[in-house]
Amino acid sequence: MASPAERALFGDATLTTIHILEPERAIADTPGRFVLVPQADGPTRLLLRESLDDPLRAGAAWVLWDPIHFVMEQRMLQGIKERAEGQPLVPEVLQAAARVGWAVAGIGLIGLYVTNRHWAPWLAAPVGVMALPLWLSGDLNGFVAGLLAIGITLLGFLAFGWRWLPAYLLIASGVALVLLLAPDSYTVFGLLFLALTATATGAFCNQLMAFTTVTWKQCLATIPWTFGLHAEIIQEGQCRAND
Image (cartoon, rainbow, N blue to C red):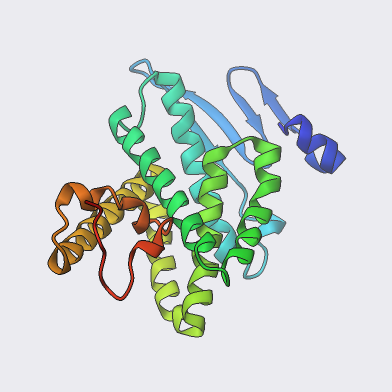
């Protein structure tokens, strides 16, 4: 079940013992139990069950383990359903928009780091943490998600210190609710990033046009600034548009 890179790095720790194997019926204790149940009207249900006696959720660990495991297994089952039925869970146009949103958020976060000489060295932290998972899995989407999760957390503390904590806890609670309740949290977050970008760009352009004779077309040409890539074009609340 592990990739060659994972087996090379972690050895026997990646091995899985299968205790029950019934072809076209069940594979069990891996530690989960996957069971196929044919239905009278033709389709087949896939059930996933796990023991509550798992040592990994002993004591108070279940408070963290259960939500994380639920989100992971829910998306796994949705992925199996998509492949089995040949129908995407989310329309392709929304998936494409979500990918744009994630890309914009990633570029914006990196821009905020690199345009501040005090913050720039800290970018190595989220990149370093996510480099190994990216190498092991090749999952670029997972890399960007982890980069944003760690990077936003760190950036908030760099910018606001401990004053960031109440806002961070509120944001983290919202993120947890989306992960638990949304059918496809990746798409939801991508669309949220896209909406936030559009809102920030609109607010930036409105304020810019209030102080200068810049047109919407000229303002949109400065969109990279909203990602932190060209912060130098703003000085003392004014922007001089190119002729």
